[in-house]
Length: 83
Image 1 (cartoon, rainbow, N blue to C red):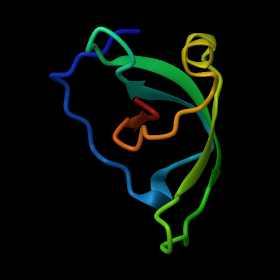
Image 2: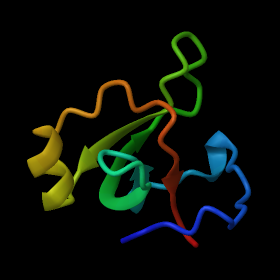
Image 3: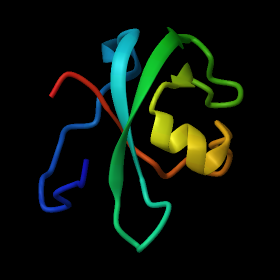
Image 4: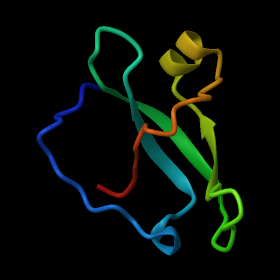
């Protein structure tokens, strides 16, 4: 799904993140951001040591095919939930 980059969204606080379906927005090719399906499996509310706040699972077959499931270095890729 292509992304409208003109839309602004509120950044969620850590305690507002819920487990379940979400989308990850990243740019893999053609310099165009695209949404991919993921699952938020666990949320760490009190982890302040390494800034790791959640565990996600890539469920989008296209993203899995393009990356092999490795999304290392995608820290700038926003995760969208409950829109």
